[in-house]
Length: 142
Image (cartoon, rainbow, N blue to C red; front, side):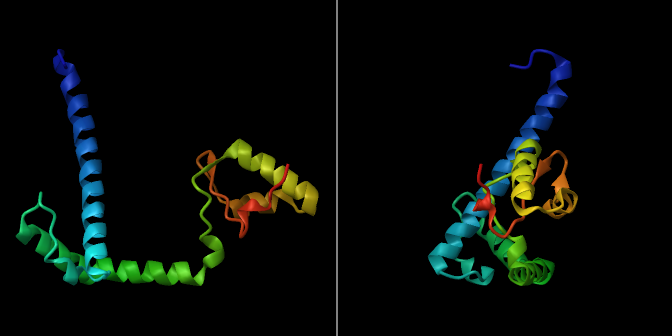
């Protein structure tokens, strides 16, 4: 597979990244499954439903960590923020490329007679991609 010695660090890096991603996904799935079985979002009720691939004492300690402290504080703060700013939480099914956003913005500004500069600031342009935060993303017509 990797015949050259200089390929090994890169291979290790890719392996670590893949393993980390897969483990994170497996943990989310285990949490989801436990929440569905117990019909509860309280991690302390999940303790009896550990995944088969994890030691029970590890699962119980994770459930305890998820139920207390900073994680719960962040979770509650995020819920409050989402509830307080409903207009900012419009899901657009992924990122919108800058060119696509620009075209939609052009049509909208022509139709509504708005200042394009202020709308670009509202849209939140980041790194060549734009997540459009219009309250109704389906208002665009061609």
